[in-house]
Structure formats: structure tokens, C-alpha cells
Image: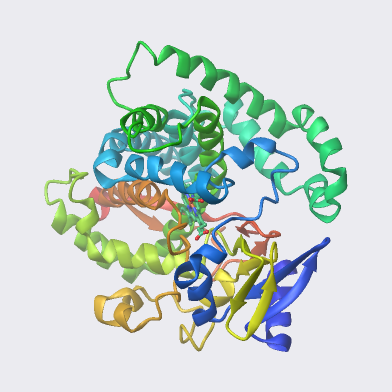
Length: 449
Ligand code: HEM
């Protein structure tokens, strides 16, 4: 690991589990001390309830999306949107996910027949982008089968753009923000955001008189705002729904796709773990058909996913800001607007918290071992009242996809597969990427059993 990751771990060795630095003009505290992390995320939540809006200078809608909303407005929107992400609502979306998995299987089968290596990092990105566009953006796209699909191509460019040098400039020098905001519509992100926005405006208007037979996230949000009308003083506007949908794409697309890709890679390089997982999945679904209702009861599947998310957390850090005049954090006094960065990657790789941290060992998440961990030792989805609202959505998608594929195929290494762990690049404040992609091959189970 080099670049940002190395720099943070070097500073941590030198300055300890809570140290300060400046990003541009903004003071940041990098936190790896579990008790202090708990204070920020849970026990003293009200002093740190907002997320600092790095992206809002360039993308003003961010401040209307759930990720970017602040204070009372965030609380109200979160309480309207929470029911949208319950397990029972997720069941409606499972059908979309299962259909996309079947299309993915066809592509994989094609590669298997040709004995090709597959870059699953790229293929799962196409898979999750198709799911998010259909479920959250009411937009039908086909990137699984067509790598040149307009939506996928532009979304990929957009992700390369979210932390580009222009964004960095806006963070370092907030005063030039308005100029950057003016230019944003001409960037790939601006263009695709504009077209998604146009589509959502017309879709929300259409949904006044039409309801899809399987409700997607847009529909669930529109229904949630109506059902809470009497209870809340706040009304979720169309702009809130649109902003939240667009930023679901930012929060839920690459994170989920990386989680899936790293899990499949780990299963390919640790065949004994894959065999154990296959046995449990097969035992749960002896007729080979995945029952979407029972998918959350396969314990070893949870363990494998949890261990992957520990070693390769899709969000290597996340941020909150001080929202009171002075916050008391352990022995420290922090002024308003100080940014607290939670060092998820550092915590997940701390040998004092997770002995032999680079060892891929799903047994760490057996119930008895799990109970011994500090509640802040595993933070892929954050923690406390402002944790990831899409956790169930993501886990549902990952479990459906893996179970369906594993029942039919064995993931195996190819000559392009890197030995464990693969070389990683930690990009500033956003994600951990495999430097050379993640390559595997597939073998059909019926041929080998
Ligand atoms: C493996 C996949 C995912 C990971 C690792 C992940 C991780 C995270 C993390 C670390 C946070 C910040 C939590 C905090 O501040 O305590 C977050 C927030 C959020 N995530 Fe996710 N996420 C994933 C998938 C998704 C999906 C699929 C969606 C939507 C469908 C989603 C929507 C959101 C939203 C809206 C927030 C902001 C919540 C708020 O501010 O109230 N995420 N996520």
C-alpha cells in the first residue's frame, strides 16, 4: 500500500490514535482510538451529527441529499427514508437484483466457455451500476451485457471526476467554489447529473398518476413522504428525492461493487473457504434455487462478507464535523467545524484490534468471537444514528449475487490473479482500489461435482 494510506499510517505511528492536520484551510482530526470513535458516532452524537460537505461547493445538490443534509432537516429526512430501506421493502427490490444476476451469469458463462480470465472488478461495477440505475434512478440501462452502455461509461467518468484535481482545489481554496460550481455542468459529472435529473423530474411527474408494479427506490421515497405527512412538520420535496437518488449512486454503486469483487477474489484464492461456503449455501438451498427470503440466514456467508469488508473496507475513512461551539472529545476541546475523520482502514488493520490483520479469516466473525470485539472495531458501514442507510440494500445485493453464482460455479485463480493481498491504491478520502484489477476464472460446478 502506498500514497495516502501509507502517509496516514506513518503519521499514526508518529502521533498516535488521534492527531490533527489541515486539509486546505480546514482542521481535521484523524481518529483511530475506538473509545473516542464511539463518543463521536454514538455517545455524543449530537456534537458531531453532520457530515462536512466537501462535495457541496462543486455539487450544490449534495446539501439536499441525505448524505449532505444537516441538523433537524437531516433528522426529518432520515426518519422519512428509514422505512424505505427495511428488509421487507428490500424484498421488492430483490427481484431486480436476481434478474440482473441472471444477466451477469450469462456474461460469465460466455467467458467460461472461452476459458477467459475475467476482471471482476470491472464486471461487478457494470452489475451494480445496472442495479442502481434501475432501482434508484428509474433509468433502464444495460451495462452488464454492454460495456459501452452510455450510462455506465459516463458514470465511470463521473467517479473519476468526483475527486479530481478541480475538486481538490475547491477543498483547498473554498473561495473559488462558486466559479467551480459554475463550470461543473460542463464536466462529465455535470452532464450525466443533468441528464439523470431531467429523467427523474419527468418520472416523478408521471408517478402522480402511475405506480410501477414493483416499487423501486424512487417510488418508495415518494410513498414514504406521503405516509408521514401528518406526523412531520417537514415535507420531502421533489428536489430532496432527486438529490437523494443521485447521491445513492455516489454512495451505493462503487462501494457495493468493490465489496462484491473483493469477496469473489478472496474466495478464488482461498478455495477451502469457498468450499465451506458452498456447502452452507447448498445446504440452505438443496434444490439449487435461491430463496430470497432465507438468504439472510446463511451464517458463513455473513462471516465471509464481514471479513472481506474488514480487510478491504469500501469506504476506508468517513467524516463528521463538530456541530457545537466546543466539543469535548476525551481530553481534547474541539472548535465548531473541525472535521473528524474516522480511520476505518487503520482500525481494521490494527494488529492490537485484529491480530494478524492481513490474514483472511472469516472465523473472526463467529458469534462468540464477535462478542469479544469492541463495538467500533468493525466500521464498514459507519455506526450510530447516521450510519449507512443502504446497508441492507448492499448486503441483499451481495448475497443474492454470490449465492446464485456459487451454486453454479467455482471461482478459481487465473494466470492474471495476483497472490493475496493484491496491490492496492488508496485514493484520497474515497476508496481503496486494486491497482491491477481483480482477475479470476470460473469453473462450472456440474462439471466438477
Ligand atoms: C458495501 C456497500 C456500502 C458501504 C461499505 C457503505 C458505507 C457507508 C459509510 C461508511 C457511510 C457513512 C456512515 C457514517 O457516517 O457513520 C455511508 C452512508 C450512507 N450510505 Fe452507504 N455504503 C454502502 C452501500 C450503500 C448503498 C447500496 C446505499 C443506497 C442504496 C447507500 C447509501 C448511503 C447513504 C444515503 C448514506 C448517508 C446516510 C446519512 O447521512 O444519514 N450506501 N455508507
